[in-house]
Length: 93
Image (cartoon, rainbow, N blue to C red; front, side, top):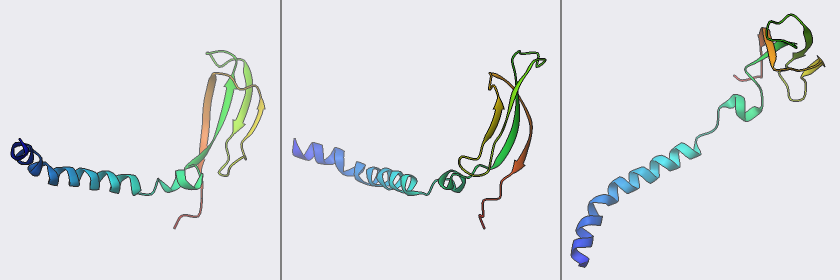
């Protein structure tokens, strides 16, 4: 019985080692630099409305390129329009 088991396991050693190495490499890679530093790719301006037709203005939000810098006024509702975005310069180079 031991020989039959050894004949079955021995050819599987190399694929097993390769799979373990692949998983180790993929999990040790650094995260996306934007996500790691907390710096978004861009900061956008949104306007919010009380209705789906966007006729009743509710408020606005301006995202920021740094943590905690978002500014909002009025009410934030489920109906929004993105007016535009500015790219963030987070100092990668």
